[in-house]
Amino acid sequence: IPKGTCLVGEIHSTEWIIVVSRGKIKVVSEEGISIVDATEKPVTFISPAGVKRAGFALEDTWWTGFRHTGDLTTEEIRKEHLVASYDLLEDKTCGQ
Image (cartoon, rainbow, N blue to C red; front, side, top):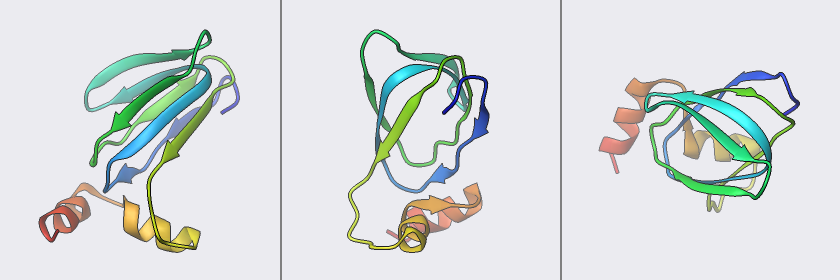
């Protein structure tokens, strides 16, 4: 994520492992505002299902999300692990 970029993520319907391996980014979510600072060392955390974030890259940032999947195409992965609205998230998680 280049420095100065403002972005909005998608709603994840499943838990993800997040690794910020380089950079510094301001993140806003339902949980509040935080700074993820990987300028000295990588930052790793678990992102629970249902979280949607917006961010502003304070430095060039490498943000990677990991999720186990047997799906083979981008379309299959998006269908399985992302939702377009919180209503769809509730439908998906209640059905599991």
